[in-house]
Image 1 (tube, helix red, strand yellow):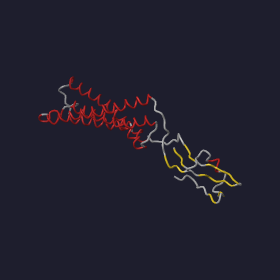
Image 2 (cartoon, helix red, strand yellow):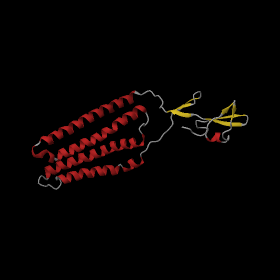
Image 3 (spheres, one colour):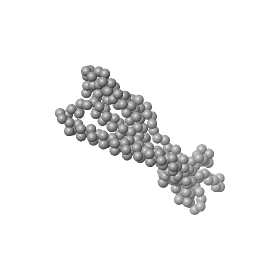
Image 4 (spheres, helix red, strand yellow):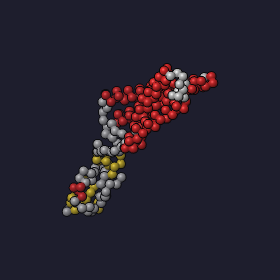
Length: 225
């Protein structure tokens, strides 16, 4: 990555490549201003390798990472197991009677929602261990959306399950709020509502690059960041 201009050297004589007034403007850059015989030149360094600084992990961060890994494994295994059991119940039920059980529909939606939350855990683990975000803007948006949509939608679904139980106990003869079309429409509406609430997060979340560590090797003209 070339940043400005190159350094020319010919028979121990330096070629003037830029005016000395620019030295003040870029004094914090990786260019080095040199003066000799009323002439100035820039030594240019090329960024060839990009690495984060090596930091010693604190016990608190390691404990948090281990906890996140356990949560990810338990969540993935538990929700996939529940979905597999529900699929087996629906497949083996006579005349598809279990297919019409609203509780099974809500629990299936809740398991899928929990899986969305689990998707955000691996990137959170890497972020805590490395100390910086490594995956770019797109994965940043996916990370926040999966985690936030899962938390919001799970709250909506638990509320919907409570309402469904209330309707089943207090209004057993009323089919208005317990029809298939109402349940699927309600779940779809909750999903849309969750995404609308998180639309600003999806639009404005981005990653920014900050140089927090820099080592220059003059001999090899390498800069490690």
